[in-house]
Image (cartoon, rainbow, N blue to C red; front, side, top):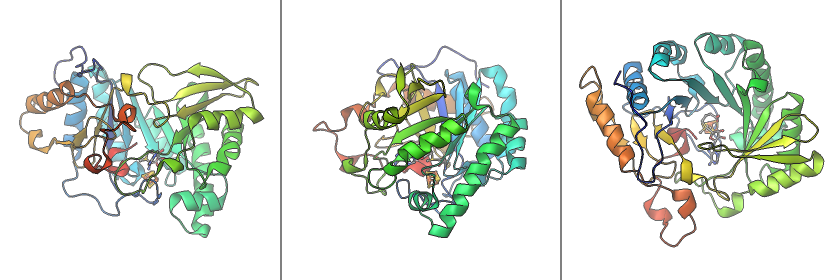
Amino acid sequence: MGERQSPVRDQLARPLGVLRLSLTARCNLACPYCVPDTQEPAGLLNQAERLAIVSAALSLGATSLRLTGGEPLLHPGLEGLLAALQPLRNGGLSEIALTSNGVLLTAERALRLRQAGLDRLTLSLDGTDGASVARMGGQSAAQGTVVLERVLSAIDHAVKAGFDPKAGSLKLNAVMQRGRNDDQLVPLAALARSKGLELRLIEAMDVGTRNGWTPNDVVPAAEMVARISQQWPLEPLGRTSHSTASRWRYRDGMGHLAVVASITEPFCGDCNRLRVTADGMAYRCLFAAEGTDLKPYLNQDPNHFALRQAISELWLKRHDRYSEERGQAHSNAAVRSPAEMAYLGG
Ligand code: SAM
Ligand code: SF4
């Protein structure tokens, strides 16, 4: 592992803090707002290469790792990777999180992930009835009901395995799309409240080129909060530095709600996330026009000097703030965002 130094800072003085590492671009669902691949990309990284990338990011100041996809539970080496990451705790790795759709999260798997050293888990669910889940997950009506039941069970399995919602180690993500599942806002909040989970409502984003996003898809975070607050009054807690979510507290003491307002209230100003795809492309922004291929720098030397140098240079040049620029005349959809969400990992 490279020697740890103070975090490398980009052109806007933003430190590197989080690595989001996508383990696969494949998924067992086909959410139309994401449109994942059905096959692995050529050049899928192996475990040694993933560890090298994590080590290099840690040496440049990252402290937090989020494993994602595609669907990361499809990756057969997930538990092995988690175990192999544990020695990096001494090198500054303070937290390992995972985002999953939960469909494959059996009781045994939840326990194995916890025992292998996973700290936090975010499960994604976009509705509370089979029809909504089917629509948002690109499934048949019958499959929607099965998916819903599996994710509800996954929540219980995760809690039993030790992912404690009260400690923030289990959360629920839901993407909101106008006219597709925004009728699920209050039911999803009710579900999360009943299970003691923080629900993170995400504005539908214009990532990639496949999902046909239009501004009409977006339910603004302020509207989501207002609609839920009518039912259960909320008070604001704000957004902590480097975080994606603005948090709210239910006045009746029944926990928290969060909104990720990437479209209506962008948070580029303190974004500290580096994304690496399953095939080793590094992206400085969810909406970046191009990535940097890290594969030529892998396996060059045991200390990963070239890899560290490549990531450092990429970060030093970083000036991306697409969400803030969106809507301004020079942000042109035709010249940006070739990478899809299932590669970038959310
Ligand atoms: N398959 C896993 C899951 O769904 O949780 C992990 C990968 S997924 C790309 C990570 C997160 O990104 C999910 O919570 C998903 O809902 C969210 N997401 C995907 N496409 C999105 C979009 N176009 N706008 C907003 N969020 C999106
Ligand atoms: Fe799969 Fe997650 Fe994309 Fe849905 S959002 S298709 S579950 S990778």
